[in-house]
Amino acid sequence: MPKVDKTAQERIRTLVARIERLEEERSGLTADIREVYAEAKGSGFEPKVLRQVVKLRKMKIEDRREQEMLLDTYLNALGMLESAAAE
Image 1 (cartoon, rainbow, N blue to C red):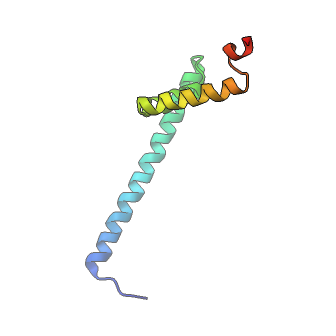
Image 2: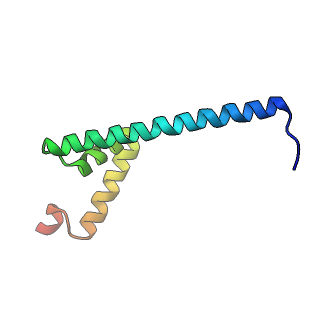
Image 3: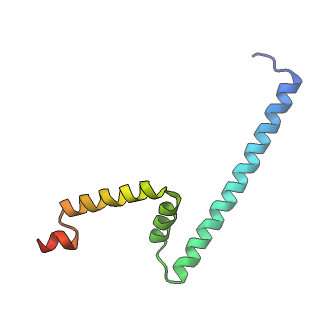
């Protein structure tokens, strides 16, 4: 096995410790987010829809518009839009 000098060993330990700490923080944040969705559900809001809203808010407006246009196109092709059902 190759030898690693003391400086590299310490750097590796520091990096691993930071990663582990961040992983713990992420786990905590994930639990907090789950609690907020549970709270929303308890207040009568639909968590699935809230997740979609959060996802859409992260998107650039052009990307969101393109996705909405494609969705409308596909739904129209399947006869799932009111305008397509009337035809």
